[in-house]
Image (tube, rainbow over all chains, first blue to last red; front, side, top):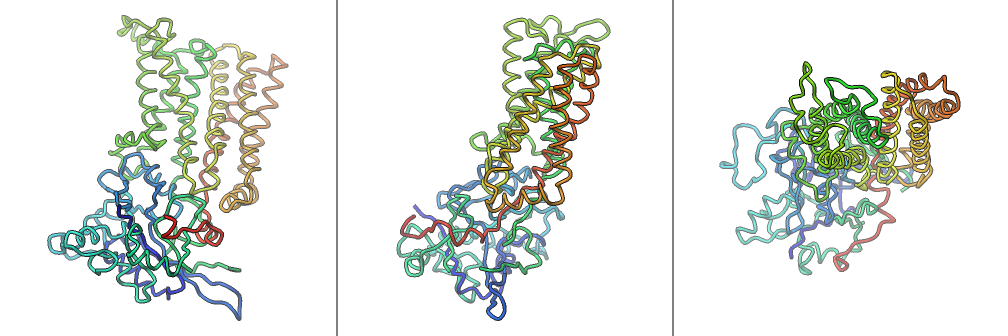
Length: 218
Length: 327
């Protein structure tokens, strides 16, 4: 059984925010919605102070509290572990937003269909962008590990985590290669081999017991 | 990690500092309060057998009408606050894990069964168009009794579920406690008793010892659950900041004055005095309601406003590790 996961080596991150922008461009999210921000913070005190970075995104939890909280079944977990959302099913209760320990669910009350995408591009003209759809006002949205790229890549015989076109945009874009993606159940996948070599990994908010699939290596 | 200071201007939720939840506020506190008192009015008036002593409107028991009205208005407020209000009906679809779904179903069951239970008593210009139905609002027949039991069971869930919605997820430590739904349930019961006593006063009925004792019992139990919740897991990340905000921060006066003092202690003392002095019972019935309404609302509103997500990074260092080998 496939379990898509992402390892993030925070020691490699240079805080360039390329992943943040790549994600926004790929998913064409509304202006106030950022699926993959990089938190910057200072550690230590002068003269030994330094900047550190924490790339973040939906943790695609094994035991996702957002799915449990959603009253309309607008959130669901695929067999490969990706937590998906369906804006057509969402009633905008925002229960998922308060249930998620990572703040990974977003809602926008901007104009209907607002997104960075403009100029009349459609899925027909940009076939690789499965997420290029209207963002519904008053409903939630979130990172899906670029499920549209994974699915379309798999259909073409590509390997997510290895082949660029089948890999999440943030991973592909990272110049420092701090994001590593792949199948956690496959011991030869990039993410598994990276964790074997550089582990152990940690999860954010382990106290929430969500079974996160975004694993951090320091 | 001696100092953590977030720098990103555009970041609102993902952060390294405690973050206050901002998605639920006054409409939800109103919804919680109305649902609680709505369920409580029906349930407690029937358990005490005073439903028909508290007045009638168009032949229907006033206390039941107020109960239905509170729940209907609470539901409408919630629906209006949804991102997609016309999809409200979908909220019943996840009964497996969502307390909102259970609540929505219970609201509907309560309104339907409660409404059907009292409808035979409807009197318009002396006529009772549904009078031939084999039950009445008093639930004196088997049919009526069955409807009353189903509506009463639904009323318990209606009083309880708002707290359960908050308490189930682990994301906000202040909410993730059995004390929250208990507080909501007991506080709703307390306000419902105060409302029943007010209706008794307005209808010239007697405020009974039983009503006052039940009010005292619910009040003491509410106060106890609040205090136990405040004193447990005080240093837990997230809850620590919630308590700081509640007890020493901007909500100190509202919580200590509005919830604990004038919402709990003063009403308890007044109820105990009323138990011993017959002459003050009518005044007590009114005052307990007047103090109880803001207290119940403020308790719920402040519970929402001190809902704080702990920093995601705070627990990274000491967290259980996860590796490919262990998964």
